[in-house]
Length: 77
Ligand SMILES: Cc1cc2nc3c(=O)[nH]c(=O)nc-3n(C[C@H](O)[C@H](O)[C@H](O)COP(=O)(O)O)c2cc1C
Image (tube, rainbow, N blue to C red):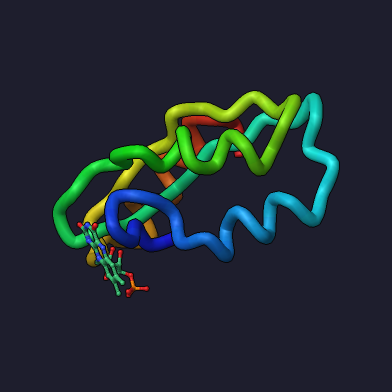
């Protein structure tokens, strides 16, 4: 998702709230103009109770597919 005002857009909260994610691992992947993850996880945590919410990573808006793939592969995805 894109970082909007230092957090995930609230539609991401709405998405998470559609599922029972307890016991699941969530790894946020975000893009932004320049700022970091900011309060992203603090705001997302309330929408995925019982899930393990990892720190995740922020990429620049022009990150390449190769860069994203390399990051995801680090998790064995
Ligand atoms: C409403 C809005 C708020 C934004 N807030 C931030 C911000 O707080 N920090 C930042 O670095 N970029 C911010 N941006 C830039 C977006 O993060 C950037 O455009 C996005 O990651 C690129 O994805 P896109 O092509 O889907 O917009 C904002 C953009 C919009 C439209």
